[in-house]
Length: 161
Image 1 (cartoon, one colour):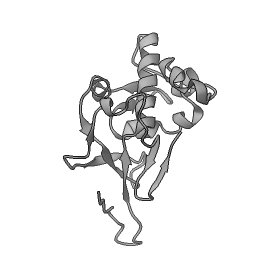
Image 2: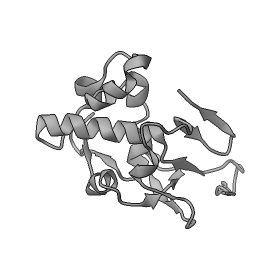
Image 3: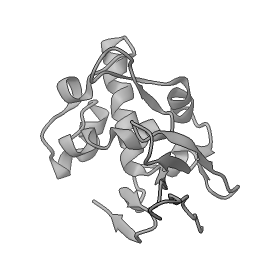
Image 4: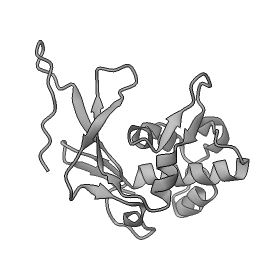
């Protein structure tokens, strides 16, 4: 895959980059779905209602309990960039799972890479890098997946558990 970011005509810096769906984003979505299901309303404040201490040996249990770490809270944008979760307007810190997020949890195939603008206020998704082979479904993120947990592209840096 070769993505060439847009660059500023004045300074030459890149103004777009790719964000990928990875195991970390999927785990955030899974934990949110559990927490929202328990609450019985599609509104959640991840920092106040979901954040917990990190325990590596209990990580999967943590997700199944609807909890996330502070690092994961800081990476909510990964799921948001792909339209799986959204900020709730007028309710600071509150998020919901979108219909696309629920469809993804049920197996919908979506593009793996979102194109993100560095220029817009919230670093918005401005489209998708679409190649037929670059689509994913939740089935690719099984419990025994050995791929990168947080995947950072273009820097060849891959972080794992």
